[in-house]
Length: 341
Image 1 (cartoon, rainbow, N blue to C red):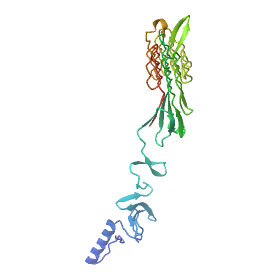
Image 2 (cartoon, rainbow, N blue to C red):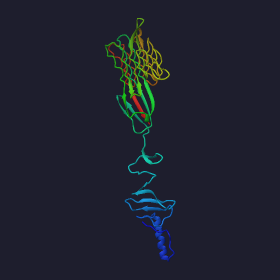
Image 3 (cartoon, helix red, strand yellow):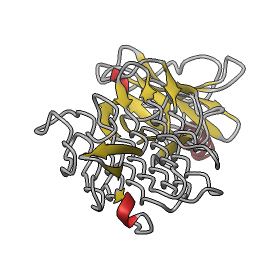
Image 4 (tube, rainbow, N blue to C red):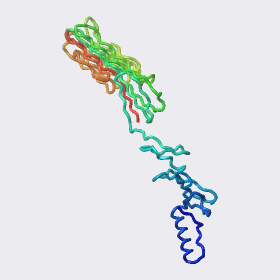
């Protein structure tokens, strides 16, 4: 530590050399000392050693005050007014509100949360955008031994993009169950799939169960209608949905935002886009025939008649059964997936 008057005196050689060395020592040590140098010039440095940690100061342009640049702590410098303290801030980034700089947590690239059962979604602290996709449960197939059982309709798919800041701090997530299978030895229509919801913001309805109807004296296994975003499917009509197609498809109609209508006669199930696909049908006269359910691009697929096959998740329709000893297929449960980035 050294300070000097920054002037080399006109004197004899040993005195002049000592004066030069003192000024160089002050320069090299940034005029360090417990009190301010007595002689000052604009923009000179001073390391103030009067406290527990040295403070780096610089003279202002007018040479009438000291500007604090930072505090020297061990081998680091905590800059004043430029960088906040770096202590315990590993892995964070520097941000500012236009006035004050601070350290911020680096958000993850993205996160994914999957709900296969009822639960509570809690809004994360990091992220900007939320993409929520919701499926209703699929309907189960009908079971009519030795005649024909229609396939269940698929559950609807509803998808929405949100600003994370617009979502509540938490939301109840309800996952619609798939329609229960009809046990072997029991003749009955299939069961409708359950409704899924994300708080009060989104709802996806389930597909209808397959059935058997009497048309002109002929028993027909009718496919269940696919679910929509506004209503569940019925025995042959798809559930209503949002968008350009507000109503679900009638029997045999392809769905758009609404569910597809269930098939009748010996038809395959109609397809859908966001609503569930319609279930396949079969007439009693062709009871051994299996008619495919309609696929949905995003919603659950409709089920094939007379297979008794359980549906897949999310929201697939269950297969019908025409075998006395074979139960109908259960519908696939709904699902909710939340992406944050």
